[in-house]
Image (cartoon, rainbow, N blue to C red; front, side, top):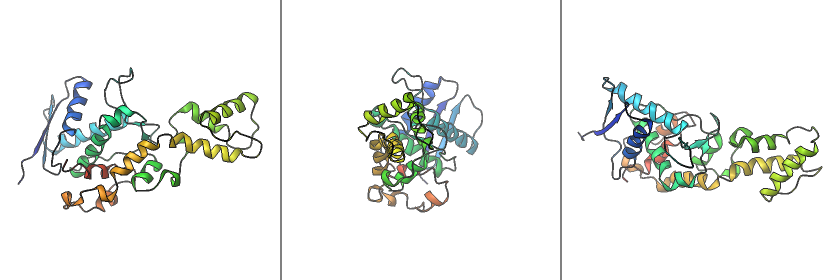
Length: 252
């Protein structure tokens, strides 16, 4: 039997120190993530599977709410933006360049392997891309736009109510900033769809980054042959396909 991985985090430490313990663990190279896992939480007398489940619960919450990383003058750096059920990847070059999305994939897959909780709340558009679809064919909803100012401007075009001069100016300014056709009396529905798609597709680089990681020819499935591929889908809700990301990292 292979020796277990040892993970230690002191819950008496500051949030920054706890987060760095998680990030450092999942950035380790050449790790066989399918090995048994022993978790130790400093300051907690509990032992056994309950500790492991609690650790992964902490990790999943961190993925959704953010890690305590000092970036852009903020105390918390989220990996995803938006509201629950419509989370999309953060458009932060810092996160991509620092391999934080790879950390996220390893956490999700590791949690699955050890019976921990799933990552919930991703947008259906994100799931569509992770499954190999293109962003152009994804169903995008207003709730998928994390910028509330932009969302409110796009919402002005819903329905058939006439726009005031101020509202029309807001729409035209947004259209102009993205080099889209200007609003006129006949293209209201088209402008609505174009603005909504662009509001999400401006993060296309980050969607494509995810998609490249989940392509079948990039996944070393034989390294975790003891886990049926279909189980990563069938056993989990549709919004936790980040599990696929971990497969690329099992022998890295």
